[in-house]
View 1 (cartoon, rainbow, N blue to C red):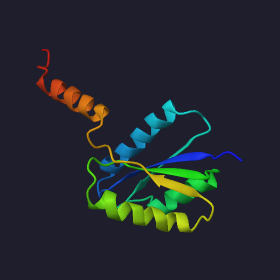
View 2: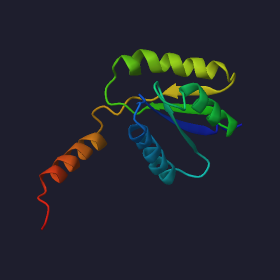
View 3: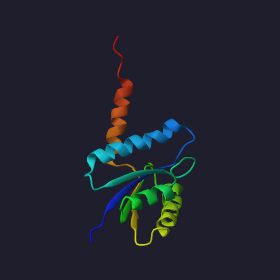
View 4: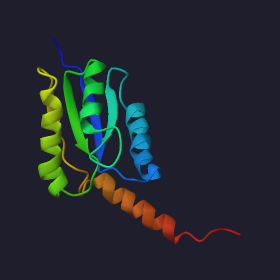
Length: 129
């Protein structure tokens, strides 16, 4: 039996709806780049819904047998190193037989460097008019 993979994008969560919607937009872009057999869900570590437990369950309900939990965070701080692995393990405990792995945070990935360069260049552009 082959694994059916899911990607679970996890951010910190915010009391501001606009901030929480960002990860939804990122998830849509990830879905657009993946094949139809992949599952992509989002979760917030705290302060907003869906929780990690709820989103992990949604992955399993869609047939996932292996969940890649990706911290949509920059640095390997306390949340990434301690809190997220614990919360994901707790969520997985409700789904025996479902495997999971926690991916590295965004960090100094070349894509982040490109994004920084692009944002800085955009900030320096003088509006026409």
